[in-house]
Image (cartoon, rainbow, N blue to C red; front, top):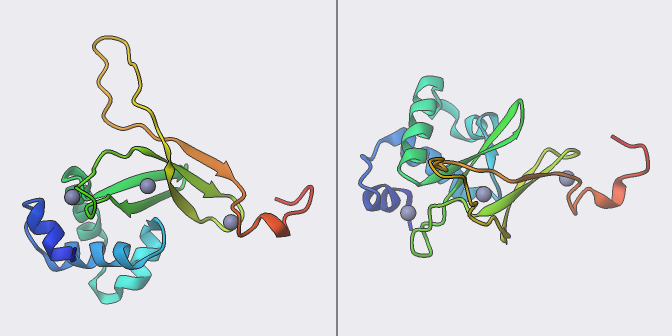
Length: 143
Ligand SMILES: [Zn+2]
Ligand SMILES: [Zn+2]
Ligand SMILES: [Zn+2]
């Protein structure tokens, strides 16, 4: 599905920054931070527009936001290819060594049994540690 098809399907107005943002995420191997997205977007990047686009696309269910730690937020596409699956149902993994964030699609986050009257709008499971690319090079005491 192309970026403009995704926007059409979600009845979101097609704008150049929105299309560019979706394309960056489509072409990347995992969730991207604002800085990483800005580097790829180049001249199309504008801070205020970026935040508005992120809000619109998150609200429409096109992307999801992952809070990796208190300074790092990354963005990833939702699964529009396979029947538009928009709940974030998977865990994320943040590598403290290479600072890559991974969508662990195979690790499902169960829906939670909240007490009466509590409404779940967003819940995250972020596992922090060392990824399989960095694992071999880690020695005891290494940070
Ligand atoms: Zn979709
Ligand atoms: Zn790593
Ligand atoms: Zn994800």
